[in-house]
Length: 392
Picture 1 (tube, rainbow, N blue to C red):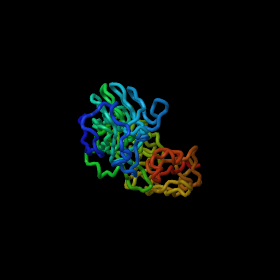
Picture 2 (picture 1 turned 180 degrees about the vertical axis):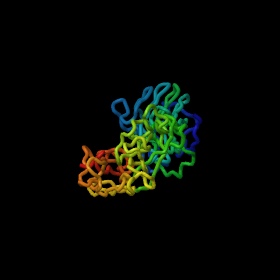
Picture 3 (picture 1 turned 90 degrees about the horizontal axis):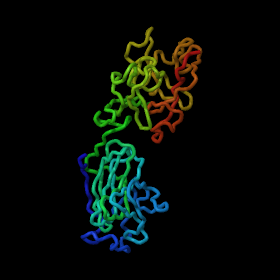
Picture 4 (picture 1 turned 135 degrees about the horizontal axis):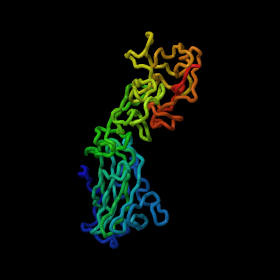
């Protein structure tokens, strides 16, 4: 992978000496008490815990994972400030951050270290924590000088693993590693390229997706705004699926849905969809399984095709996330006919074994607000009505 562009900042502290001395000869009582925060915005959110390596569980770091080699707790530029001595020809420590592209558009990385001649330090970032390193850059830090980089992350990612790796038989001591969210205007380089994207990840082209499909999926919302997003999936159309399977809409832990081969006609009225074939009604209208679609010749006897009126009970879905139905809520459906609410039936009784609840926005099935990825931003698990209901 070609080296991504970055902006290397000049050291924020003066260098104490030009050549790199052996670590054993470095002074411990240097007058650099302000060094750990020099050049760093104290208000910027940190992506790395225990940036100063203060928390040790016995001989191991509590918040960092030792991936290879050996480490020891040692003094650094001040005898009371601890750091990590990286011992051996190949040593790597790492930490995973759960931050994603919705939180981070620019990362300021800073490091304080001292290295012997024959030891090279590298900063690495794995933006999906899937074992594929998207960013790797040598770090030059001598005599406890603070160096900084500004890195433009991929336009989409969920979770990132930060890794500091030492190569070479000589020793290196790392005193501080920080990664902070800063103003996007500071990052001038293009976003890092992220390939091998999993299903549900936002994408710009199919070649970025692990399964080779980048397709548009609906994001049903009470705003009734027709919002869609392109995500990686395991199919693009029904033709990509075997047998009678259809290329429907599915979800996992990511924020958006994705296309996936599934059995046909399995979704009830009001469930989110991407194609007609996955709906029992054979109609997917504006991202929801429906009886009809506005403007289409789907209704008989001159009935109007409209969205079902919003429910009235607490937690009911707003009109924008209700299905399209013929004479919706008109109360003219006889026994055994499909319904989502009592107002559809002559008997005023629409019965089902369970209620149909979906996330607004998003459309995925849910039981509580906690099941919905947008709940922190006001999203909610709402009740559409009866799941596969019939008039009784």
